[in-house]
Image (cartoon, rainbow, N blue to C red):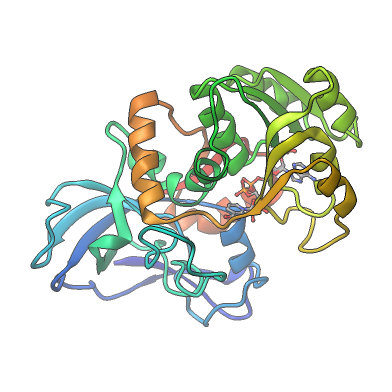
Length: 335
Ligand SMILES: NC(=O)c1ccc[n+]([C@@H]2O[C@H](COP(=O)([O-])OP(=O)(O)OC[C@H]3O[C@@H](n4cnc5c(N)ncnc54)[C@H](OP(=O)(O)O)[C@@H]3O)[C@@H](O)[C@H]2O)c1
């Protein structure tokens, strides 16, 4: 079967397409899945660039979607032919978070989905939403579930809430879509006016170019009659957090998600305290969150925004495209 491995030293040119043995038949509690698609995340990019060091020969990519080809003894949740999508934390099924690293995450601490076949415990997957293509389903594992958890699980999003999303990458566009589908008002920022046009076409009510407005909090306050937004989906990190705190209402919620501007910095703690905001760190979500999200997607009918799709053998080009940051929404691999 075709498989992609990441050689050492890491880098985009260290991604090699190789032939590997068929993984065989599933044992008790396992499923054999023919993987048809994956999607790229900033996290995968970190692995490929060696910023998140992994074993030599690691099979990259956390997201995987495909079809169940065989089931092992005792598997009742899936049948042969079912469309499934992988889980980011295969061991975190439900309840409170139990991990603070990526040691069990496919494509990082363990082998991922840049391959045609896997045999894994059935609990490493959930059903994909009805009517989704494999590429669409593959966007849910990381980006979709992160946005869902930020707004719905941790944020308790309600109709009438206002949501600020930063940039037009995978997580932010999902957050925009979930927020609109659930009756919220959305303010989106971007470095590019063309991308902001796309965001408006996807339902953003207001847009701000953060290149032109380096301090965008005053714009957000103006757009919310001085109140600030109920939720910020904070994918920027240290350079954007101070503006996010100023953009968020007193008592509002900031989902601390991303590292786009770095991994540490100065937090205006007194402003956060005075504004009595909830700043909540999160990494993706558990299997039950994914099951709930799939149900939510089936009810609202939202479809992921896929900017471009590559073949498995074009994985180097797909990461170069991600690095260029020209995309809106998701970049997928289909095979
Ligand atoms: N904690 C978690 O569970 C979790 C899960 C998924 C992702 N993440 C993190 O969240 C971030 C986004 O991930 P992704 O996969 O959605 O990335 P992505 O698809 O590669 O999106 C990147 C986009 O972010 C925007 N951006 C870059 N710098 C920005 C800035 N200073 N202010 C505002 N927007 C900026 C750009 O959009 P424009 O060109 O429109 O400006 C860029 O295209 C990454 O740091 C990733 O590691 C965390």
